[in-house]
Length: 150
Image (cartoon, rainbow, N blue to C red; front, side, top):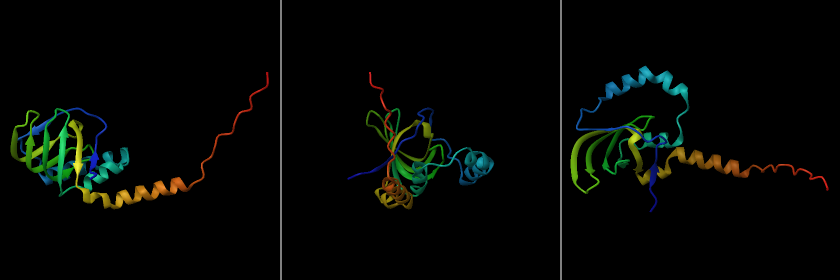
């Protein structure tokens, strides 16, 4: 049974537990302010698009410090910052804690397990199609250099 796992590139920062989660209005206001800058700097990659498609589904997130969070992914950002609700947190030593909201900084995420139903996502279909087109192209071999005889 395969699961979809998304891993961030940089691994730094913090997790805010028990703090008031940012409201949807605050998040959309932040996106509006950063919108042009955030989207024009670079295109969003396939893993981040897949993460956005996972919103509204149950996810499991393991952090760099070994804590595991399982809950409903309400919102995710391009930086992999995530707002998760109805969370069950398992500490490194095995203690289990239930929380209403958790906001996780993306750079602290070691990996994230997304629902299996995202295997049939249109984004992954596009990637498969591009790979098939790339495989169908004839490969160019570099010309062999003639070695002078001694």
